Amino acid sequence: MYVLKQQHARGVLMPGEAAFYARNDFSRDRLKLLCQRLYEIDLLRPMGEGWTVSAKLAHTAFWERQVLLVLEALMRTDARRGDVAAVIARTGEWLPIAAVEQWQRAGVDWSDANSRNQDALNDGALPAWLLVPPHVALRQAVNNAEVLDSVIAGLAPRIVSLISSSQIAWMLEPGRHRAEHLDEVERALSSTPAAHAAAVRHTA
Image (cartoon, rainbow, N blue to C red; front, side):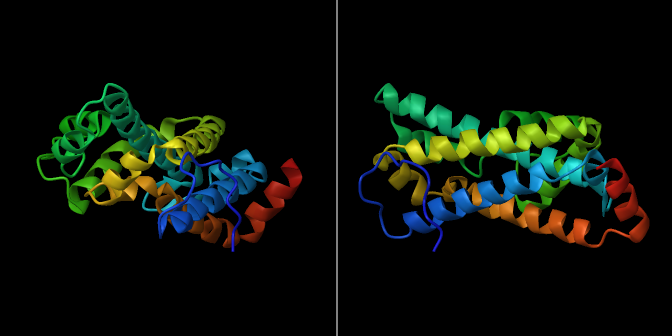
């Protein structure tokens, strides 16, 4: 079993909590180890449908930043002794500000935040993510993962309980989304043709 590295604010974890904290920690360490061995030529590696490794990291960093903004808003509400449950309820299917803006620019109907529209957002944002310098995308992916996991680990038990029983429970487990894309990146890198591999060795 993976050993938890974060110091959690709650003394005793509720059933199921330990598993998602462990997944967050494990996926974050996977990300860091992967990024430590990537050259720029690896970051520019095509992944199909217009994506590159760098764009995939920029995508991951973007969504983790959005989750962080939501969690910080909940923490501020809690600090003011506001109604955190009401804020979560109003969040509905969760439309982050940056996501809504990108949907609007792309002419996408953002009133229904289902997977179809999330895919539309990702497709619309891909050109911007491709423009992010590879080293910046890498740094942001690692930094955002570290900050987000730290915030999740420090959430008060009452906030964790409210989120866990809501439609945004997935926000407590960025490790799942992160691991999904790490798997994709590792598959892309493992299929590197001989010419690409020779170029990587040349730049080492």
